[in-house]
Amino acid sequence: MGKLVEGVWRDVWYDTKSTGGKFVRTNAKFRNWVTADGENAPSGKAFKAESGRYHLYVSYACPWAHRTLIMRKLKGLEDMIGVSVVNHFMGAQGWTFHEGDGVIPDPLLDAEFLHELYTAADLRFSGRVTVPVLWDTKTGTIVSNESSEIIRMFNSAFDHLGATPGDFYPEALRGEIDEVNERVYHTLNNGVYKCGFATTQQAYEEALDELMPRVHQELHRLAHLYMRRERAGHTLQTTALVNEAYVRLVDAREVDWKDRAHFFAISSNLMRRILVDFARERGYQKRGGKAKKVSLDEELVISPEPDADIVKLDDALSALSDFDPRKAKVVEMRFFGGLSVEETAEVLKVSPDTVKRDWRLAKVWLLNELLGKGRDET
Image 1: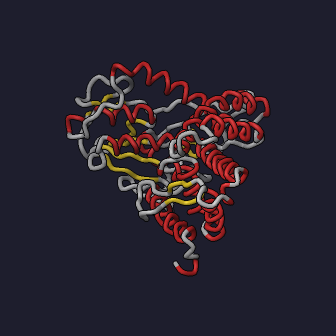
Image 2: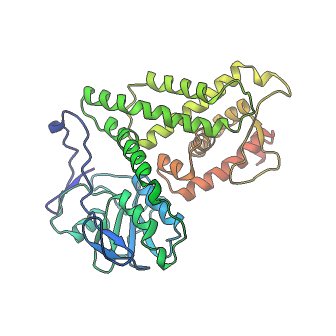
Image 3: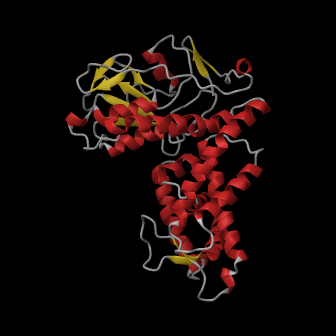
């Protein structure tokens, strides 16, 4: 963690003394735009959309960068806009391209540290070095480091060059989209940072009080993703699951919320514990033929009969955790938490491809365990 001061890197923490212990995020410094014709930028300078001209720098550990990757994929811009991925660990030099899982080196400047791109764009730059970064190879500078604006550029600027059709920011819905984004940004996306980076108890509690209502809404979404697999009339409904998880989170007010990924990890574990506790209390494991079945079959089909008793699944998952904790976490987050591949990668600080591989192998192992084949026979 650090920042550039007049072009010189300094390993310094956020200044919270002047804000009463509160974490205050500074606005992005590069606010230029890529437009279809290179004219009429909403702010800063306008850059013309051209295939192969721009390069995107991201971190799989950053939720702000995730949405630029998602929009790049949705709009089919992979062949038009290159991408580099920094190491998930942010140390004394900030984001680096040091060797690690999912790292894609910088092919343009052969940079070792991301802050080298910032000083290449502005020799006397002062501020935090963040991802994502959209780089212009033609002029050798940063177009933007504001994720919300980069996804707007990807949404429409390259349509005339063969981007995948589709408008994810339709004019008729922009007011509503902006309103939701503004609310979610301040209370949830940036809310976990305000909790995790607060340096006084009062600042922490104020941030937490603002965060928790949004947490309840997010828990409801995650619970609904799981409960919609349940049979109609199941006695544990979405609201009950959410309320139980919320109560346990509120009881854990001393948790140091580091970021959005930390919240996802804890909420997924809570969902698992609540569902399994409920199943055990109802005695499902002792009712032959009446055990509630849950499907492991998501995205990757690995068996024509992929159902398993939820309690037995929990036992098998605990056994998997004994010798491969990461694969067990992938299953917990994907199955119990309802997280996407990208969200799971964010939590575990690995690449989406690693999550997909772990998910596939873990399901094979769990099915073998549940079918009684045992670890020694696989």
